[in-house]
Image (cartoon, rainbow, N blue to C red):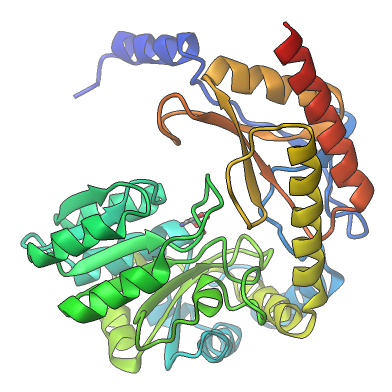
Length: 393
Ligand SMILES: *Cc1c(COP(=O)(O)O)cnc(C)c1O
């Protein structure tokens, strides 16, 4: 129990001393529709390299128009949970379109990705199960196993040999990020899927950062790996990232989805997201499907960024996705570099332990198809100048 106020204050002071206290930024305005990568913070316009709006859809007029039209029909709030009276035509159509997009029989909307992961894992695993999880998985997957009361067995990042051994030991469920959110690399999905099939185990992939971005059609890391619904029975996707809206979904076969609808507590006992959000997401999905140029543009920018960064000797982690982490070592250094970048007009977030392992504090640079070549070049120039300054010191 931590009900002593003095103890809470001591813990806060310890966070401060360890450079781990987090602070929020208050966004005054923006982004504007025409400039999805510009934010106004404390009166200054800054270039944003820390969002997850990978395709520049967040401000798209089609999303806003769809939301407004839906609000006219359904009001703002959904008014109830899905199983009561919160499930609108817009939600229903979106589920059908997401099922079609991901090549699965059905999809089920959740209010957030965090809740989708908690609900799915807790519905499928129990006290007597062992769940295998990559050490770098998103926190919500870890918390889902805890909520399930199952045994959590974390394996070294991307170590499919360790997964094979644990499956021999009787584990039945593997959960992994598709694209790792703080590293940008992709899980060894073909190996994990083959192992799962071989041992009659299940593989759940949380593709929060892959959907919309990876694969020729934007169907994510599974499309890129050439894996189908047979090989990966359960896919979790989030809508607050490349889709530029809010919420999440789980896609799978009809029995699995009906089971989750009946049993996933984070689905049942919560208010549905507004119909307007579902309508905006339908508009976003349409753009994801019909405007592949956004993905191509993003890939070209990633290439441009990595080539320029390498030319300056910047220690980038190996990532082919829009998440491009630059290692800093300790938290203080990461915070210092982020502050220096902000002075130069860039928002880049410093990611520190416990979000990432000790000693691997980093800048998490994220790219969007809405960035210009000049934006990328300006960022690399600023990073290179800071890097040179630090090396000379
Ligand atoms: C962002 C994220 C989530 C959580 O999704 P929300 O909709 O923001 O709650 C889950 N998993 C991964 C891998 C994520 O990056």
